Amino acid sequence: MTNALMNARDTFLSRFPEGRIELNGRDWGLIDTGLSGGGGEGEVFLFLPGTLGRADVFFQQIEALSAHRRVLAVSYPSSGSVAEWSASLLALLDAKGVDKVALLGSSLGGFLAQYFAAENPDRVTHLFAANTLHSVEGIDTRPPYSSDLWAAPIEELRAGFAMGMNAWKQAHPDHAEMVDFLMTEAAGRIPEAEMRARLDATKRGPVLPPLSNTEANATVIETVDDPLIPPPMREAVRARNAPAPAFRFLWGGHFPYLLRPALYSNLLMARLGIEPLSPDWTLNDGIFEA
Image (cartoon, rainbow, N blue to C red; front, side):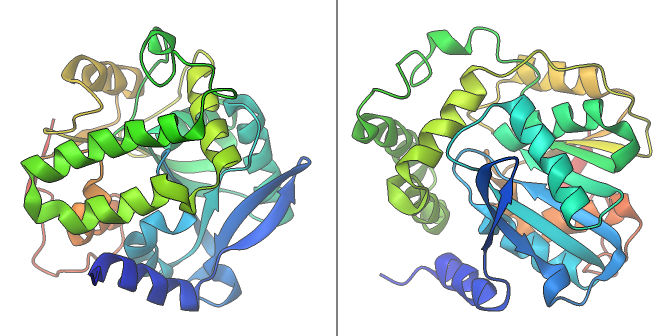
């Protein structure tokens, strides 16, 4: 069966393939449009995916931004903690000669982005904390995090993702392409060791240090129908990122960047002061400020 989303992703990868880079002794995946893209070297954007994404999961946003900025996006290594990954991201910027970045993390990536921005405020021009969490307290009591993530059969861990995604597909059959796209990631496109490492990094996540956000240099993104980030957690994310404004998609589940890519890209560009994709677009076009 043809999947237009996968086909578009593969076309993107033919232009911006994922390479490999060693950072602090760990092997990371990296897309860097500065090697072949149209964006300038002076302005840089960094994408951090969630548990079910490789660097290319933001391909539609990378396409939109690469005409204006150099864009980096990573795939996580097969070991390490949030604190260790944050140190590796700093090493990445130094290795690439990048002084400052705007960065967006979604879900696990949003937790990591908040940690990185708190630890390295002088290296961050704008923080986007998207569909994410403020704390991992109590997460070790809930599946799959309640399991021994390095010993549990990988089939069981992958099956947990399949159960949740299939439930979303049944409730939203018009989102079938997105679900199939992510099911491919969960089923093996993200290798076993990398999948375990992502889950373990979330389970053992640190207490997030305080942020130094302003209204201009940070943005919270959330979705009304996100099944993974409940309303109390969204409220807590908004509170710890204040006074950053929070923008709420009326629908889009946990993956609005895949389900509503143009609107998502327009929001990023508007917050960065870049001309949006649609000249008549406004911040109230399908989303609202919380």
